[in-house]
Amino acid sequence: MDMRFSKSNDVLGTVNRGNPTESSLCTLCRADCQGKCETWLASLVGRKLLYPRDFGIVTAGANNTTHVGVSYNSLRIQGYAYGAQGLPESLSNSPDDCIFPNVDISTEFGNEVKTKARVPIMTGALGSTPIAARYWEPIAVGGALVGVPIVVGENVVGIDKEAEFKNGRVVKAPELDRRIETYLRYYDGYGGIFVQMNVEDTRNGVAEYVIEKYGDKCIIELKWGQGAKNIGGEIQVTSLDYAIFLKKRGYLVDPDPELPQVQAAFRSGAIRSFARHSRLGNTNLSRWDLVQEAFMNHIEYLRKLGYKKISLKTGSYGMEDLAMAIKFASDAGLDLLTIDGSGGGTGMSPWNMMQSWGVPSLLLHAKAYEYASILAARGKRVVDLSFAGGFALEDSIFKGLALGAPYVKIICMGRALMIPSFLGSNIEGVIKPERKAAVWGNWDNLPKTVSDIGTSPEQIFACYFEVEKKVGKEEMKNIPFGAIAFWTLADKLSCGLQQLMAGARKFSLKAISRSDLVAANRETAQETGITFICDANDEIAKKILNS
Image 1 (spheres, rainbow, N blue to C red):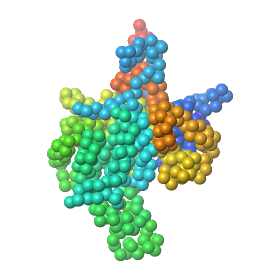
Image 2: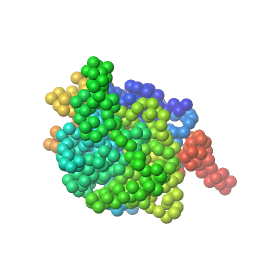
Image 3: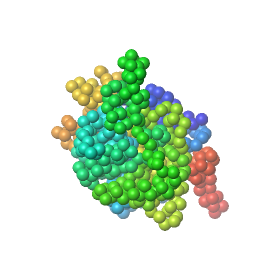
Image 4: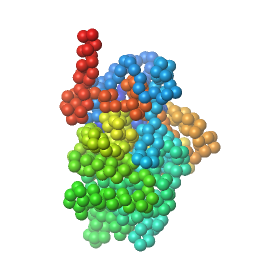
């Protein structure tokens, strides 16, 4: 088996509270967790976690040497002993310039109007779940400060009790406004804010509301699905009155809160919660060409509304649906297509559904590259891609970018980028007890995993003063600790990615290619088209020997 992610990593001094997944995160990631997986600890100490602990009295060796099965962990990153590609004109290929801090990891995506990002990562969709609403501020502020895109997920308007409708269309959306405006407050031209729409959002007139109020400041995103489930989004509701409200708002609520027997069961305690579901899209269409026609008509409508940036998010459906997403998004001139593989993370997907449905990320992403290449070979423009589904560490970011090169411009990270907001909010609630309720802090005291690092934000967060330099000492008072943790994690990921790219002799993202990866077993090579590790450059090796 692949030994890379066990529950504890003695080299880094990290421990997973629960069972680690392929991404290194626990299967169940808790907002109140006291640590300390790699992503959790990196949100405090930053790039220090790139290296083994206790330097000076240790040596360390890798345990990720046996690769069985097809996954991103069975891809390895190729290094080279000479050369340098992707250097800007201002730098030479001398050893003085070819250093990892000079690696340019900025990216951009888009058709006619480009969206720039300082780091090639973006958040997954943070929608109607309570955890997304509670921790939105640190995620949004952190994302804006770092300069990466963030996505407002589906159903935010539909579940908002304060939202107001006129003639079936939203005219007031306080929660959606809060989310957009929180991000835009610190937006400086890098990054961007997506607003995602599903069936209910389309019916509620979310696109019309956003364009009328915010103009071209937002990217509108259509949603076909995600990697975590093959039905619409769900949330859990513990209030009978709220469940009834959601049903009257037009949602499917299970069990039906208006049935007398269900209400009796709720009052007796036998039923303690309800599940609110979204509807499936395209159910009235029976062929792919009909889907294409409807899709193109919808895009045309959004263009007429005034949208200059439009994206699509699709899930881990089969090959027909993958081809549809790539072809339709390319033909429609969309700005980004996010392809989310199984089993992505979420807070409410049926567990066995998440375990059993869909195409795993590596296989789905390998086919996405193949299909994109077919379009490119025909002389067609290929929509810029984002890969999602199990990305958390800098090496997986590199692998996703390389596997899909040159079409993949950015990596979508869901659960990983939520962890610093949880952690920072818990710390803020202890250090500023008057803020505990406001930031949804879960701790009464700093656990030893944190206090061993420090007891003030200046001591705890390795990048505290970098954030202060960006916003100023006075504004620093308004920055959530979770946003500082977000910056700190992004700094670790950025540095780690720069180091991997420098070792591959690639000094800009545009220089990354599939040849920078090798497959650690032949099954992975067969399924991905990535060369088996001992076959890569074997011919030139023999030419050297025979020269």
